[in-house]
Length: 371
Image 1 (cartoon, rainbow, N blue to C red):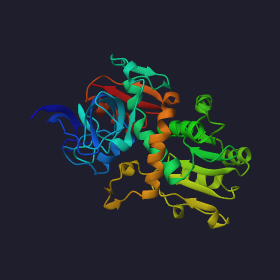
Image 2 (cartoon, rainbow, N blue to C red):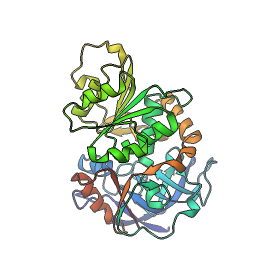
Image 3 (cartoon, rainbow, N blue to C red):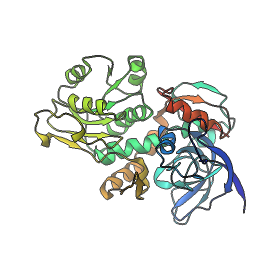
Image 4 (cartoon, rainbow, N blue to C red):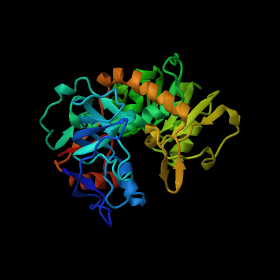
């Protein structure tokens, strides 16, 4: 048996000790899946949260985002070939053999992106430092987008059912948290892939950057009259809303901002129900709360978290898969990744990355590293 290095969850995992480097077997691809030889990795808040909220198990492979080259393809795989440059998202820190922080990982075709320009990605690792938002033309940049894009497509096209074949030019999507990693991608997919106007909420310092991504209106969430500004700018045309921050106060604000909409569909990323906030006297039928987006079900498999089994909805998955396969590839050359914070090579950097995320020291950027 040939072994590889991997970042796995240790016993008594926690701050500064989220992962340890161990040796595990190189996997074979199950039917319908691929094996990726990885190059770069990105950290996400879900990584440390799985550990802190005791959803991880000792020995699980950590990490949810990676990029690299297809090493093997499983039976029935037709969309990917050995040698393709890809990035992939997987349910790390939880499903024992599916994490992304390993030299060779199993990838779901439903959450893997192929880069036609991948042959032009530099072989050299990006040195430690900060890198501006830009085109996806490095392994580090590619590693930073896949979980985010899975979440965005599943929310906007799957759950909110924004039809890419329909003209949405007179409608608005509200993105609360436009400078989050998910918000940055949501703005771009909405504009480039769905043709809908975007009003977003973020710190004032991010205004010009978010407008370069396609935001039509940017409102500073610090402003006491932020909701009034949104309503004045959109004039009842908010038809869809995504809360990427997903806290009770932001969920309330999203609801309040749609006060003038004849009908609006809302989504958030932490399964917050409408019953968790104060509702006004509008017709309840004017508001639809989408099944909260959970990227882990995008591969079509059930997920059990906190004792509850979450199953993918067939119609939502169908819309997601159609967009992922037929529309997303044409968007990739025009999408921009967030600013990158590149850490030192090696899996030990996962500990630093998770600490930075847990301590709230990451804003409008993605933390990445390589081997």
